[in-house]
Image 1 (spheres, rainbow, N blue to C red):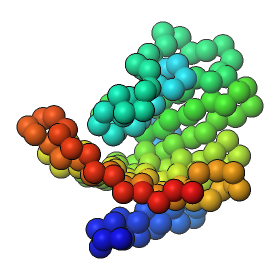
Image 2: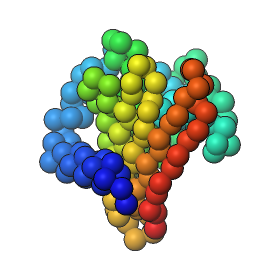
Image 3: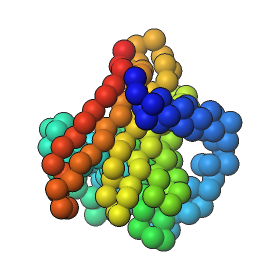
Image 4: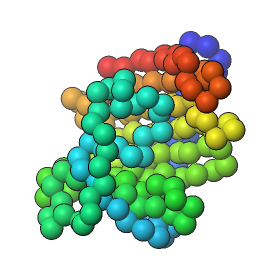
Length: 174
């Protein structure tokens, strides 16, 4: 494992600790920053910053809903801040709960904190940008449950002008 990967994983682990220790405070700050809520169909994943995400993983084109669902079941709800950034994402899993991702913008870094519908830390992701282009995306999945995905993934992006020309990925998943 190279030094850059080790450093990124250290940062992601600290972010996971931060989520565990300060979840209520982080959540309140993100929810307070919301100026508009929007709804989308299941699988829209509008908060995902990875280039070519839909093409690489066969995801459908996102579609915003005109009205909130009467009873959310598998839709996604997005909270936008005054700058138009998604700061809260709720992915409904039936009528009893949702997974929630808090997105904290710090300059050219975006931290994503996901919790499962049971409230357990589910994922930490870090997007690093430069000149308004994502340069790397780090994801850390803690072992929340015996049957859940855990490990890490780091993607680095190379551009040719404004287009992504290469994606380099390292991972250790179980």
